[in-house]
Image (cartoon, rainbow, N blue to C red):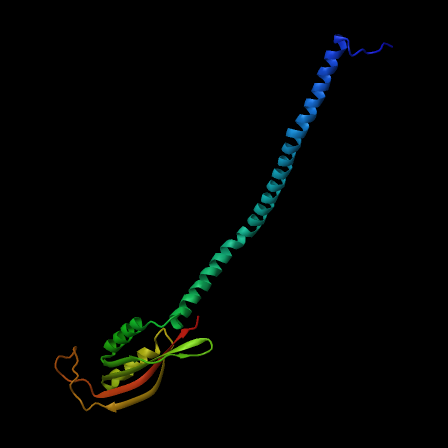
Length: 194
């Protein structure tokens, strides 16, 4: 067996090349392979998580149409309840509705005064003092229309009397007086408390 003499260039250069190759391979392993491997592992885990999420979404997708339909039904129900029990009192809208109802019944609204609201635990009572004049049958129609409002309407403190002042004329009947009775009452509507 012969001894390897490192001073001999014939052995020294190949040994240096092998050592430099080992050192280069070690540096490549430390600097590139390990971080790249960690990125690959992390990416695979993220891919697996996203596939799991996608499988869950695909499994729930058939229920989506049912939930959309249920949401629309609940939204429609909420909208109808808001018509009955609005979020806030809407005086201009209420005046327009009462005026329309009064015209349809052939009576005249002579007074519409908002009163102080009363706060309850879950709702607010919106009170109004109203006076109308017209015929007996017109007043009955007016009250029937109020009973069929979308809003919940309570009428209290009602007073009906004969109209001695015949100065109110119908715009529909020309110059004939149509005001035979006068009614004063308190009307209460309700709005939700926020």
